Every structure is written in structure tokens, then in C-alpha cells.
Image (cartoon, rainbow, N blue to C red):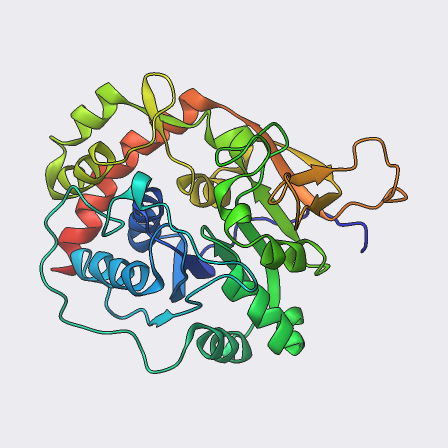
Length: 322
């Protein structure tokens, strides 16, 4: 482990690999990433999480076709966690992972390479170190680091949706992405890479109100799609729905909306607290070292205001691709 420094400024066009398990909130995050002028998406990879990897990968392809962005390669990744039995979250995200909108039948397919091979190729060919955003279980990223440790210098930073310092959503301590594959998460947090953890401490505050979801339905084709899937989203917090994965994209664009602290995060991999992400607040074991930037608060109003202004931009970007 090492002490980390946070000194990144968003470049004019940020090259990204997105590793996802759509999933409704993943779908909304990807919708923004696919249409935003500040991102250069190099690769999309699917992983088993909210639903099976076959379904999450198909959902990546559906969104590419919806936005006219089939230029970005899509690769299928891990079908199950490293060591644990796979259990999905279809009770939250529906059987397909992306219900609520009638997407047309797919007209293109994933590339022949699996997610690990595809990530290695993209990283090897990159002129500069790249950012990886992971919004599902971290199985693909852990396998990448295990099988190809030589690519670590080509990874500038990992932006992770997952974890929590204040309590879980699948147990009293565990957040879903980490709980799904805690062994993968443990590898990630011990990797020495620059990690930003955006977990439930923030994402349960970054809500899209029920009224906003209704208003979005009237905002063109993109609004109808996003409102449809959000309405089908069986996750609620107060008078709205949490937009967990969208916060990773927002963080890249507006880090000033977030309060971020430096922590030493340990992942619990067995027992009743499995999937917990524990910070050594009292510095009992870490000897002053930190391994993660952890988002602990967010300007919730700024989040929702920003999100509503993005819908017209997404409509315009979609229209430009047609």
C-alpha cells in the first residue's frame, strides 16, 4: 500500500473504459457517457451483477443502438464472481435488467474478444494512462489485474461505484457491488492503483425525485426512455429513486459537487460482515497510509439540477447521430 495523491484535472476529452452491469442506474449513467462531448469511450465491458452477463452485455448493446454509438466495442466479461455463487438483483432491476422501455431487437453483437482481452488491447494501444469506471461487481477488473499485472501503469485511476462507510443495502454493512464479489473488491483495494470510491454514503442522497421522473418523460425520446426505465426501477429512498451509478459520471464532470476524504479501506471477504468496506479511522493497522479517495457527501440539489439539464443535451446528441 502507499499514500495516494489526488491531482487530476478533467482533460478536454477523457478516454474511458466503462465496466458495467446494466441494470437501470447503469443504463442511465451510460446514456450520459455515450452522449457527452467530454468523454472518449474506448470500450464497454459487461459483467455479471444486477442480472446475468449475457443480459448486461445485451443491455450495453441496446443503449449503443439507441444512441447511434455502435462504433464503441462491447465485450462480454465474467459470468460469476471469483469464488462465490452468483446471485443477481433482478428483484430490483427486473428480469431483463432494463425494463420499462421497448428497445428494438439488436442488430449488432459483442466483439469476439472477452472483456479481459479487450481491456488489455485497449490499454496497450493507449497513448496515455486511462481511466476505468466500474459500476458493477469488480470481477472483470480483478481478473485483469491478476492475469495482466503489466497493464497497471496504463491505468490512471479507477472510479468505482460501490462500498459504504455508513451501512449497506444488502446487509447491515454491505453494498451490492462489493457484496456480489468481495474477493474481487479486495484485490482492487489492495492493488495500489488510484481509487475513488463512490458508495452509498453519497448515492442514497443523489436522488431523482418522483416528480422529476414524470417531468423527464415529456423531454423527448431520451426522456421517455429514461423515465420508463426509472419508473420500473424497484429501488426507492424517500420521495425519489437513487441514481447510484450516475454519480461516477457526475464525479468525472463535476468533482466540486462531492466531499471527498482519504481513507484506508479494507474489504471483508467472509463471515456475517462479508462485503463490508471498513475504513481504519483510528489508524490501528494502516500506519498512516491511505488507499482510496472516498466520496462522503454530495450537493444533492446540484445533482438533480444537473441531471435535468443533461436530458436535452442527450436528445441533441442522439439526433446528431441519426
